Image (cartoon, rainbow, N blue to C red):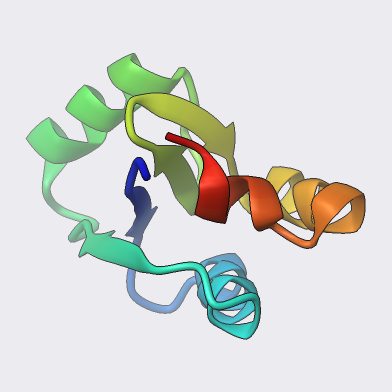
Length: 86
């Protein structure tokens, strides 16, 4: 199974909602918090994902998206696809 990684930042309500949804569906994930002043990390992540918002959720190298995309996936399959994908 490819691991799920959640890039987040302090004080982000969508980050908290995404993590809560993953926990509710028993999807294991690693959280990487970016500091607001870490310009290099933000630039690298933005180049990787094409996004400038948080959270940014990946399964392996595949971008899931942010909270809205995670919630849509939850509506489709209750995040089962994040547990079984390999």
